[in-house]
Length: 102
Image (cartoon, rainbow, N blue to C red; front, side):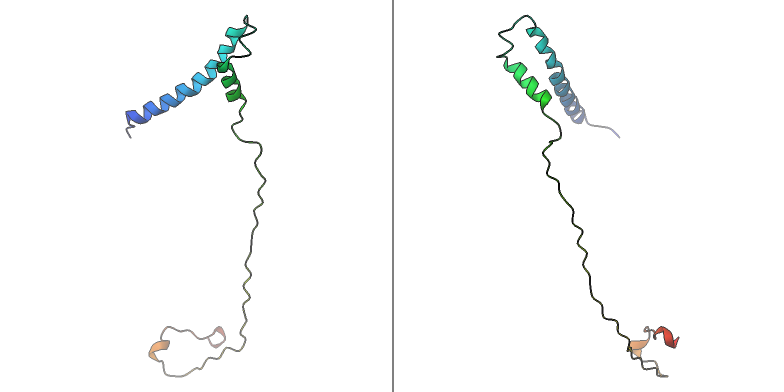
């Protein structure tokens, strides 16, 4: 199956963006001699906030799943009436008698 060049280019773009955010973290090493600039550097602030942001939020509410079971009350009919006749009518060709008559 041939993949389109457009899909490959999008994949490479996201890969480059992800790796660039990780490699820009090396920018903080350039502030080793500069004490004043490191406090006000917007690039460093953005990198630190990006690296400290958790991927999965920790304040997820605990959801409880309630299993609701519907109980249907069935009436048991003990007086089943079946009339056994020697002739078969057209509407009873496929009906079966109760098990006690078989």
